[in-house]
Length: 76
Image (cartoon, rainbow, N blue to C red):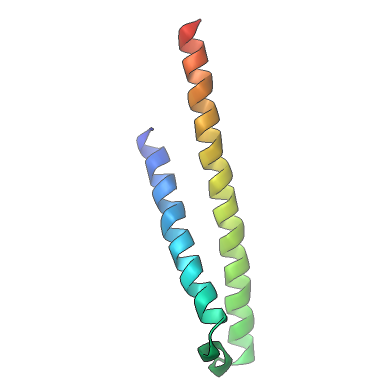
C-alpha cells in the first residue's frame, strides 16, 4: 500500500471513531441539554461525516482495484 493510501485509511479510521462518539452523544440524555439549533448542527455534522466516511470507503476500495490492475499490467 502506498503512503498516501495508508493516510486515507488512517483518516477514515479516525473519522469513524469520531462519528461513533458523536452518535453516542446524540443518542444520550445529555443531547437534550443542548439547545435546539446546536442539536440541528450536530445532527447535520453527523450526516456530513457519514457521507465523508462513505467517500473514503469508496476510495479505499478503488485502491484495491488499482493494485489489481497494476499487477495485471506487470504480468503482461
